[in-house]
Length: 138
Image (cartoon, rainbow, N blue to C red; front, side):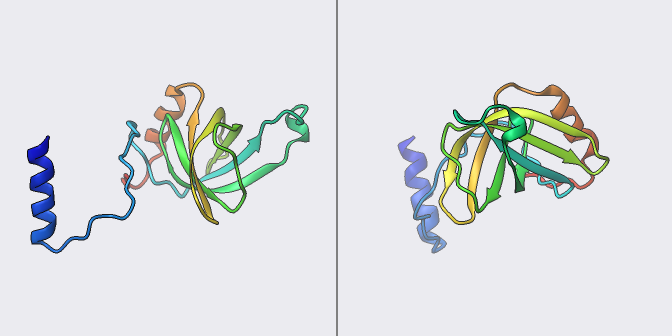
């Protein structure tokens, strides 16, 4: 491992590449798709919310998606580990509803949130693959 670090440092120095000020290793293991044809809304679940009919949906920007979770952008604040419900609406009006939680946040605004679905969704993963028009991966 030390050889790799030494090689990487020498490589970066020889090409004049500055190391990133902050870098976090990619811990996501699913294929992430960049999609512009999916509308996303978030519904907060909290102690004082007595059912979904009293919760307001927050429309957010979808940055990328996989069968295990998604990355969203919004100017609204969400808490880490907050339980939420995600609504995904495709161009053909098909809607997927998934229970999820916020697992990561990048400061903003706009804030970027890593969202993890509570359960693996093969049906969502298959549908993402079926409806993929452009091959844009992250």
